[in-house]
Amino acid sequence: MRHHALQRLLVRMQYDPAFAASLLAEAARPALPAELVRLGLGERERDWLRAMDVRAFHHDPLKRRRALRGLMEELKAASAIALAETRRIAFLDGFFTSRAFHEAIQERGSLAAAYARFLREAGLKTPQLAGVVAIELELARSRRALEAAGGVDWKAPPVPPGGLTHVARAPGVAVGRHSPDALLAIQMVEKYLFEIGLVPALALVDDAPRLELPPPSSPGKGPSALLLGFVPTQSGISLVELEEPLFRAIAAVDGRAVPVERIGAGLAAELVEDEVLVAVSPEGR
Image (cartoon, rainbow, N blue to C red; front, top):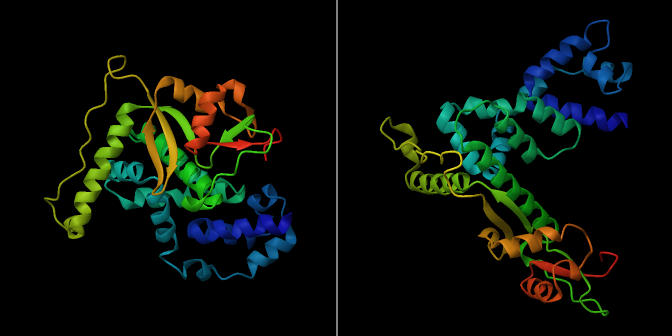
């Protein structure tokens, strides 16, 4: 639908004034801009662009900074690691000129996932960064799933009249194998940010403490991957280290209506009672 494509294009222009200026300059020429052609837009949309004043895309200089603040909250440790390495807020601000950002807006993708992609593809040297991004992105997905279901006030549905025959994961529940180095790095960043937050003016001094991460484990010599569960609690999503059988059981519940026989009726009942899983009908309701 052309009007939706144009609307998303205008959002991209608002967040990327350099892109907006380039596109408006192209629109003033006889040939149709390549970006309009790629999006299936034509002369009418080019006429709308020609009527725009480029100054409109500079009226809110803090627009990107507000969006960046939200993204940094989603991937807090990864953002801090990137800033510790680059020492430049302009590096993170570059997200809004990146292919990851533009594709997410135009294709209605997740901005958190696009930001994670930007950090992964930035060529930074900190070895723990990729693992940190993986954990924080999963946390972000779990938070969004829980919020979509009603947040911490979500209530588990009752067991269907036919009894406990099928289960699904509760909103926000996820499992994954993750790097111990990454989890330790997140803990170190959180500790550092807490200490800095006590005296924010430390950012102005040259002798402020710097973020220092422990060296990563040597390949093949460090602890094996952590089996992490992302579990909703009254305070939000919590990370829990799981034993292998429990990890496998939750991982096996990978659909809207999984028969309890796949993980065992007893364990399924326990997980439903703990609101890690929910009882559903065979149709997934």
